[in-house]
Image (cartoon, rainbow, N blue to C red; front, side):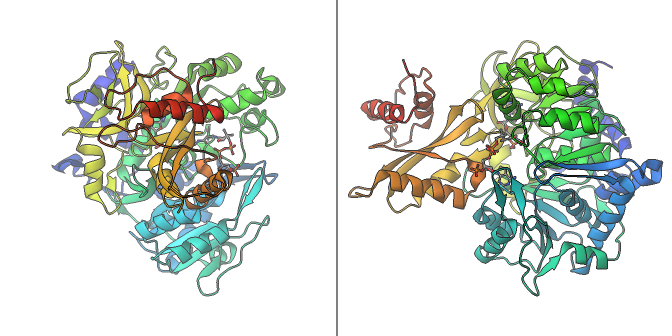
Length: 631
Ligand code: COA
Ligand code: AMP
């Protein structure tokens, strides 16, 4: 098969295309409609069908004879441990987990927040929820208790499953105290918390509310899979929106299972029994889709790596994991490769390991700069595939689908639309732009299976945020262009989202935190270019008149405030105190211009600027702290 004919088939007859792909999944009851468009712009895939995601990811593989195959390999350099869980063991543990949830009254449709680091139990907890039709919502460990509380109040979980601690190379992450604080802060209170006690820092259990993981699972009756509608929610995953209020992306069961199972063979060229490693975190969408669901739905072995690309213990960590576990495909963010390149520019560590099992490297999460792409290609001598996607879509929108046909790589492009996605670039009037011209990247509705069905409890925000810019289109929030060959180039965001080490963050949310400081009159946060992390947030604040406190003290307070309110993952470390912020005559802060000044790139003075002299002030303030052009 060639890419063009598969793609055309998906566009011409999406229902036939996805019905065929649906044979990768076991259904309890077939669908009435492959694509249900009765309630546009809400589309539903496989409506009327019944199935269970956990059954498809675990039980059926045991029935099919994969019981002794490794399902999960937990490799944890930060705790010095390794553990293999076979499909048969996974089935037992997940059934116990589901039983432990049921014992606390959790049933289909109830929400369960999971707040855990990269341990196998995080996957067991997710699958345990899926088994009984409970809706999980995993919260990334790098967020603060305040962010966790926001998610608790939005998802209103009946129960929270947490670990006592996580291990970062430089510190212990105090999950349990952070959880207790979040529950203090939240209005909604979960009935129970199930806590995995890790020996590195066991947590104190709150009597009557908290249960120990080991005891609860030992006492639980194994629970069977509960059949759910294909259109029922499997999970909610919160992601940064353009305001401080995160968006709860809702993923269904049926379409998600079909899309992910299809993607394993067709995008990644990975078959049942092979080893797939997504070096991300279960708290991100890459972790949900490619650490947990896709590899397991396809009967592969997934690697859960609790470590970093560098420093655990060195820049050879990735090569060691590939050798030891015979990884066929590695998926990570370009920033991880920039970190390895920075620590080991000649890739000397690579020579110490046998990485012959590796067939390809996939990169996503941020724009892949050509330097990183070429360096990875040079050292690995394997295809290096950039692919573009978002929390909302749950799987790649554009990729080089090497399982179908490997297309030539163009540096800077994640290649072409994945079958199922009708990518179009539109101008501000909603007209398609010519090849090579930048515009808003949109996907013509319907989105393929696996993409978000709505935002949790907020259909209106879903329609407003994604479907209202141009009727009949999904707004990706990214700007870029298509070239003559249909290659997509994703250049920037059209909103306030920045990408820090492959982590998606909202500058608007950070501005909200800075503005809450009593000395701050006005502020702006921009994403300044950074060699390692792609972008780093940079705050500019104007102090209230009459504030005479030491600026360094205020700056430290602001850095601490963002860390407390959003979390260490925001990597917010730099603030400049300025006299004024540049604005348009209508009062809009010129963040784009300040970013150009910080990055030292050429910019055109906006015609609508109120007072151009402010730009010189900003240039000198930023230059004083090492930003901007240095010539
Ligand atoms: N739990 C708690 N804290 C976390 C965390 C987690 N799971 N992950 C990161 N953090 C913390 C870090 O410890 C750091 O805290 P610090 O300010 O106390 O040092 C902070 O958040 C910023 O982390 P990060 O931006 O990741 O920087 P880093 O210096 O720790 O590591 C890289 C840099 C490039 C090695 C790292 O970002 C990386 O491996 N990135 C891969 C990207 C990725 O997986 N993206 C997911 C999408 S594919
Ligand atoms: P997230 O929802 O955290 O996965 O972040 C999604 C956003 O990250 C996208 O909308 C893009 O802005 C950016 N992104 C992800 N992958 C790529 C890529 N391959 N190239 C360019 N940008 C990317």
